[in-house]
Length: 163
Ligand code: FES
Ligand code: FES
View: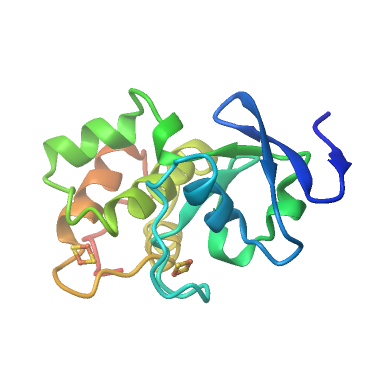
């Protein structure tokens, strides 16, 4: 079990590796991932939980790393986009042209990867609800939605709605 070693010194489980970082009490996980571990795939967008650009996976669930203190991540399994290899979501994004800009894509990918794992037979309502956690300000969600639909085995096949 990773643990709080001493004040300011944290041991984190990131992408299957034990990482030691120094964090102030108010440092977010997003900040520590980017500035101390060089994992810049999670992006600082709104930094208040609205945009999803900072999404990572913690213990299998997508979470917004701008809302989590680094100290609170001790003892949890953290996965970032850098730790995602050969996932069906990545292939689906390539095949369905779901890759958009470098700012929003990693967050969308993490959400879609987690959704396929947790709800492989998600209803359209669940799928749309999950995708609402992430925002793109410049284009559509059609290709991203097509990508996630292509790897889900939805219970009801309904026409895709915009998330
Ligand atoms: S930067 Fe975390 S939700 Fe926008
Ligand atoms: S924010 Fe990435 S394409 Fe719009």
